[in-house]
Length: 119
Image (cartoon, rainbow, N blue to C red; front, side, top):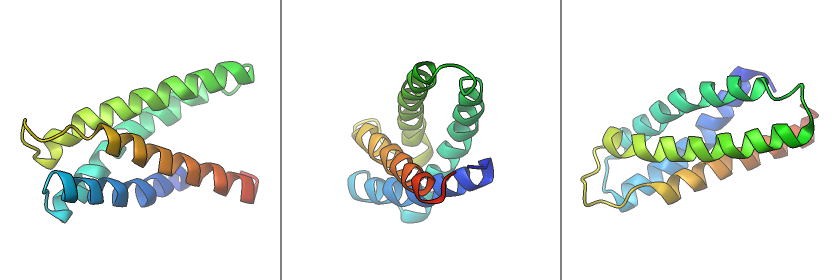
């Protein structure tokens, strides 16, 4: 899958998940929640994408290990950045479940599209 398509898919799948979670749990305005979701993805997506490219030439086990570690790091970074960007108060719950759900959603969408189209 080409990078612009992967980024668009990520934004299309993760932004609604983050927006719904932030509006419901953090009482964040939808526009601010969506903007925060896009911003965290613009930070983490390119880093993960270009980092994983270095693992594609090696054995499959190395790639999937790098992938798992990378996705875990992305979830952590997005959860940490999302709170301040969305204007969550310190007493609000951190968006760890939202980060895990959003990233799982985009990962599943990417895998399904990849299987269907042969990317």
